[in-house]
Length: 264
Image 1 (tube, rainbow, N blue to C red):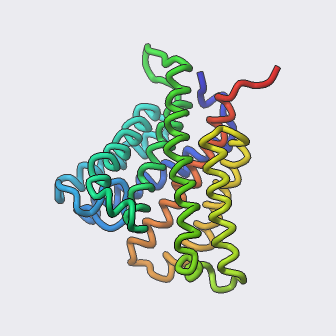
Image 2: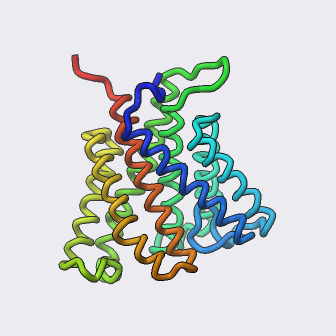
Image 3: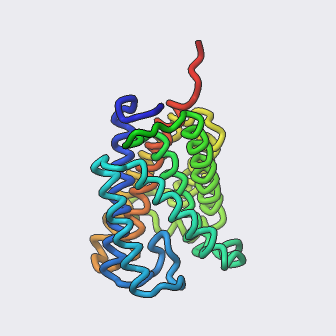
């Protein structure tokens, strides 16, 4: 069975980078006292009001801290995976036409879907705390399900870079030349990485490169935008979504590699 002792620093870094945004999302829900904007996993029009936001917020803070501290981390990862997946299936997809045709709604549905997949993959690599052990076959099913959710989401995100290239080019740092080139390059990279993770072909290399790319986005693109508009919660959320995707990519890099049979 996969476990902490079999994983290297790439996996551990991914676990921490995944856990931190989950805690931050929880803090945002509690601070706002409502569902808001693009904050995953609950869409802003979902029922529940302030009570629902506090419940979701506390759940995210507890599970995020659990993953970061490695205490009941597997159970917490499973809770996150199920919660995010249910929000997509029963809330986001109520507006399926909007998800299908509107880029913002599609992104807001795909973000929790991708993070759900990462949470399931993370759970597969974490030890069961208690007398019961989980078979490797169950772990492999979690990995397969997780990489399908995450990989397909990355492919669609990459495709959207071609659909909305002109708009996305306006978000590229002003000092970086060739804005459209970088949008197309990012789109190709995300599609290629998504395919590699979905098909488990060169997934370790793809996961590491995708994780580094998202981390560079956090440092070079999102962080300056957050500091320029410190009270804009949408910018803060975007930063931590990118950070969570970076951690997710590192998780898949090691989890898929560990689960793939080695040649004799």
